[in-house]
Length: 220
Image (tube, rainbow, N blue to C red; front, side, top):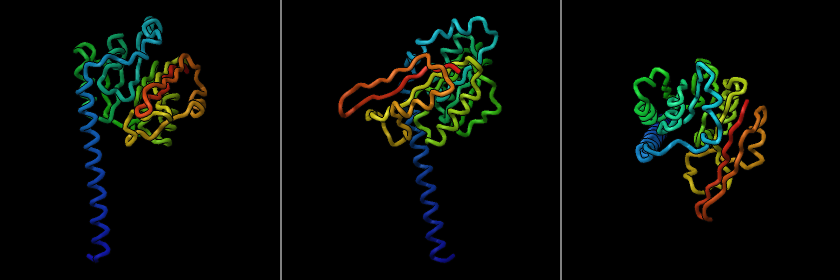
């Protein structure tokens, strides 16, 4: 092996090792976050839409929970009698969602360990509702566009899409993993082809820790 080739192989090996360490560090950080917040209630944005009234006369209701996290939102819809497809790329999340489901609910729970962009969308049914809370900002611009289009395609006519997006003024979160921050103007094109049922821009905190996000309830 020549010196140049040896250096190249060694460099590539180090780069691979760095990515592996970073991947597992992130996985461990998320696992710790999930355990720490395991008993948190579901997001109050779900209470701003009357899901129980909308679904009460339907025999089968399919809900897609993107970024299932601790499973609070999945559990909320399982308790309502829905069929839930819970997606998360962290194995701890999948375990927590499964643990929250009762024995009689588990036949209606589909656990999917995957990133959103690598999700086998074609294998999924059409959905009455899609939930993506504090999950989409971790996608790149290209992947967000791809996933956003897939969500629209998979929503049934009249289906509900609930999402949160981080605003461009946020400083209270770790931006090393978050790749998408939106201004109000950048939000507007995402709302095309939807009826906006609820939209709120939240801006609070101090100069050193600003919380800035958009809460959306959309109907196809």
